[in-house]
Image (tube, rainbow, N blue to C red):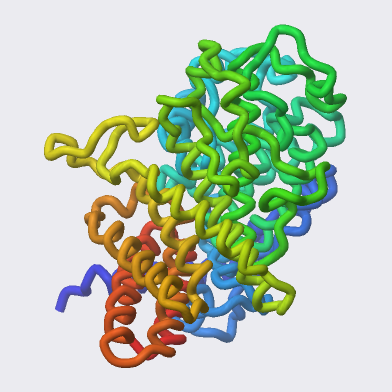
Length: 523
């Protein structure tokens, strides 16, 4: 009888694995190059765990199950072992130096990244960036090689093309080496932060959570040192003010540079909040008002880049985290919020709610007034959110039957608001808290209900972790409730788990979260 396609594939894998073991025995297996450590590579590169190799005594099926199983390093962070380079076949056959990228392939990858840059909370002036790529790498106006390498790295990941996976290890090593050079020479530190952010995002998408956390902490430290958390005004002026002086970054040349620095800070902020909450480790940026003034966030919420370019940003736009909890609008009268601004505000609210919950668990607070202030900020935030079906950058287009496309950024923004409310009120015993939880659970399920299967490939990875947080809370409420209330929360939990399962097909490390939720529940 003819062999099935699946059987043929398994036989091919068996053959390749045996061939690799033969090469290992002869000393020919091309693992990570030892020269990379001796050539002054970064500490990050040297600290990356070496891929585990299968024992010759194990069968092929056992070796495959090992690659899908738990981490041999005993990682407490879920999914930390789900990294492509744990696969010896990938190591043996696809170690391609980044220099092998042809000009055409580099151009295509950069174009692909620019089309998907919003998925990693990244933005820049596209025309200016493309023009700068023709400058010599050492030119101060050219993007630092670390940033170019990081962009190519994330572009390979976004491409989903198997033949591009092999470029990732070389690009990652090159980016880390160039990051070290940039830092030690104080060379284009703005690009250092952006490149570090992208590498952290890449680690996070690959399930390398400890590496992602360490990398984003590095971004935070340099960000605060360079003063990007306290840009006094979003409005650029030709002559810098005394408080704008910074010995690590020169005064921005124009409004575009000013806007890009503001975007870079909020990229650090969103990635840092997302990664810190996912791994349950301390944050290194402040979370709200009334804190030490040095790390206090003063940088205004981001506007659109063309507004910075055209001088359409003003001192009155200088609203930030503190004003969010004072229920002050972040825009001038008659001026719409940008979606990037709303997303940053959503992360600030989720973090604040999560922080208050941690204080409650540690029996050090929070006060009823803090909960009331945070709840008021969440409700005010919800009241000004645009409809999901809106293609504008500021939520300016009313929903109607002629605009059927889901705006994926708005999906994340709505979910952030509902998750913040769910976190804040999950342990509340009064009627108001229970009502807030019910409304939040309904809202999360309603947003998911608007998505089709085709939408999941366009969603942000951070949305998966928000769903995981929500699902855990809904399962806990289900376990502690009775009757129709338990059944209702159970149905909402199933909706969230189903969505998490679908998005895990796009971001594979999320699959472990799905498995964990099934095992920890009685669904």
